[in-house]
Structure formats: structure tokens, C-alpha cells
Image (cartoon, rainbow, N blue to C red; front, side, top):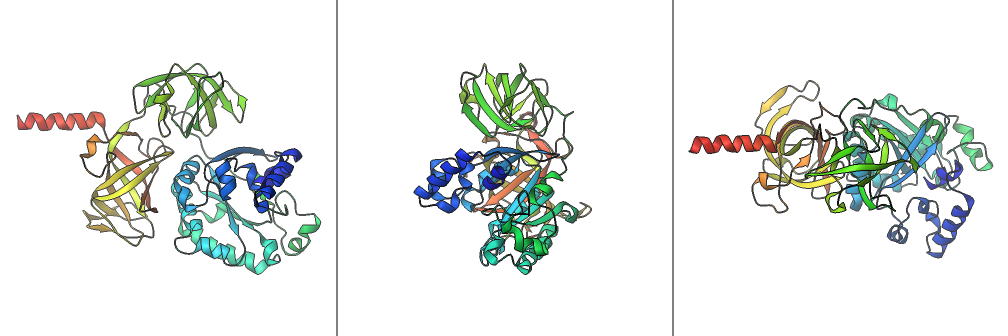
Amino acid sequence: MGRLLYELGRVDEKTRVANERGSSKAGKSSFSWAWELDGTVEERERGITMDIALQSLSTPQRQVTILDAPGHKDFIPNMISGAAQADCALLVVDAITGEFEAGFDRGGQTREHLLLVRSLGVSQVIVAVNKLDQVNWDPSRFEEICGLLRVFLVQSGFPSSKTSFVPVSAMLGVNLVNCTDADAAVLSKWYKGPTLVDLLDKLEPPTREIASPLRLPISNVFKGQNSGTGVSGRICGGVVQVGEHLRVLPGDESAIVRLIDVEEQSVPWAAAGTNVTLYLTSIDPIHLNIGSVLCPPSDIVPLATVFTARIIVFDIQLPITTGASIELFHHSRDVPATISKLIATLDKASGLVMKKNPRVLTKGTSAEVEISLRAGTLSGPSFSARPIPLEPFSVNKDMGRILVRRGGETISAGKPLTLITIKMLKTILGIIVDIIS
């Protein structure tokens, strides 16, 4: 991405030279372009992306916000946080023999990343086949990679009409913005298609939930300079304005929006689908946490510790059983949870019940389950866990997607159907007490 930003004028020559010298001095000269987005000392020392980096670029018809997400398996939670804020995906794969296979084979990160972004609602994907210059611009290698990925993309639920492939060499800058220089001579003999920027320019923005109540899951919290506390995230519904009073959930705190920044520009308001930074006042920063949701006091987001969800089980080795301990991901929040009940297996196409109360869920199964949050330990009743802000998929699509992981592996994804809120739990407990007495 660093080279693309440079070609589009988003990185100046002074910064490019500084990154080149710094990476060479650190013994990582091949990472010079990555340094534009990998800005922390640890990322540069280790040579891997660890956290989400935000940048923007312009094409003739689109203003694109880039969320550069980690690819390493140790930082999948951060990758999920970034993917939850995305409209489209740009997957960069390595064309070098053995490198692509390592990511695409069973258990590889290429497969998991595609499953994750599709499960989080992304349907448009551009695949940039990088480092083709390292295999002498071999068209058969490009077609081999495209062929393998096309099948997997369709199996993962990506519409074939919304998937594109483009051969590139990021290091040489070939076919990012143009394909006319001397380095592109071999490629241009057999490839006559669009450049990467051409494909970015054709991406279709999805329908936004502008008429819905404001929902802003917090993905980052930081100290602002003379402007209160800063929080950033992607608006999942509604509109936010300067001067507006907001509730922070979970919790019982309120804040006032002092400033709104979009791509480092101060704006009076922002709507659903926008990645924003809000500077808040009248609130102690201790009450602002990653994963909390900002919403209007008149229409707060529901809180739940138990809910039902329709899930699809991925390619797993160990079946899912009742009582299975899991890690639940929702936007930037991950919490311990339990599959407390297997309600039914469902037909993938129609959603009709095929079998009630199944004993196990195996790979490829579509099912309705009950999920209960746990406290910080494996023991204790589910209602002692801290509730999380959540909405059914039918109410707000962006707020109604979850991922389930176990043992460092993503095992399923789904959509909340019904929530058992704190108010409902208290009502149920009250009924039980009345019956006993």
C-alpha cells in the first residue's frame, strides 16, 4: 500500500527517502514501502503489521479510506477489528512459488482472511497478485493463482461478479496506477486489463443505514490535544453532529461531541459508513473503552449477555458441542462465551429447521444456537458476565454480525437473531422468584 500511496501523491519524496534510509539502516530495506503504514517501532523491528493503520486516497470517481490490517495469525483480533469497518476487501497475495501455497493451503491466513471479511459483510474483493516480476511475469502462474482463488471465493460466498484479479509488482510500481513504463514491458505483452487503481475506481459503495439510530462502535481511544478525549471508529448507523449529547454503552455515562474529524478535516456532522474521529468532553476517559458503542440517549443500543444466532460452521476438525467455550468477536470487542444450547440445524438455502436439538455441529453446518457470555473465568453463571452492545441482524446489519473463535482458529460466523437483554433476564428471574414463593 505504501507504493500505491506514493504513486498517487499521498507520500512525498522526503518521506519516501526517510523510510528507505531508515529501513536500510535497520537491515530491512525490502520493507521501506511498508514503513509508510507500519509506523510503530515494534512493527518496523519485526517487519510485520500488528495494528490497524488508516490512510486515504483518491481515484477519479472515488474517495477511498484504507484500513491496513495485519496478516499475521498472532494479530487476527486486530484484523477482525479492521475488517468490521470495511466495505470492500483488497487481498494481496504473493506470486512466488511456495509463498502463495503457504497462505492458501489448509490453515493458511489467505483462507481465514477471506472467510473473515465475507462473514463481516464484505462482498466486493480485489485480488492483487503481487511479485509477479519474481516469477518472470509468467502468465501461467497468474492464471494458476486466479483459478484456485476463484473457486474458493465462490465457495466462501463472494459473488463472481464482484471479484477482480490484477497482476502487479508493488516494489517496481508496475500496474498500480499505469502499465506503460519499461518495467511493465513483459506484462503488457499478455495483460491488457485494468490497473489496480482502475479497479478501486469501480468499487460500488453499499447502502448506508442513515435513517437508523446512531451506532458508533469505538475501535480506538486516545488523548486529544486541547480537544478532550478522542475516539475513532466507523459509524454503523445514523448521523452524529457537533454538540450532540451521546450515551456510552455499556455503562451509564454520557458525553458531548466537541469536534468531528474525517480524514483529518474538521466537519460539522458525519453519517453512516464514515470512518470518523470524535473528540468528546464532559466524560472521564476511564469510561471510554474499545468495543463500547456511542448512541443517542433517546434510542440506546440494547445490551445482552445471552442471545440466539444463526451461524455457519467453517472447516473445523473438532465438532461444536453444547457447553463449548469460545471467544466471541463483535467489531473491536472480544469476550469469553459459551455455546449454551444447540437449538437446530438449518437448511442453508431456505433456513428451514432440519433437526432440532442436535448433539454436535460439524463443518459446513448451518445452525441456530444460543450463546451465553461468560465472566472473566470459565466458571460462574452466564448472567454475571458483563453485557455487550448488540443488535439483531434484522435491525442493523453492521451491528448484527459476530465471529466465533476457539483455540486460535475461527470456527464460525453468524447473525444474532434474538437478544435476551438485562431487562428480560430480570423479568425472568422475578417470575422464578414469584413461582418459588
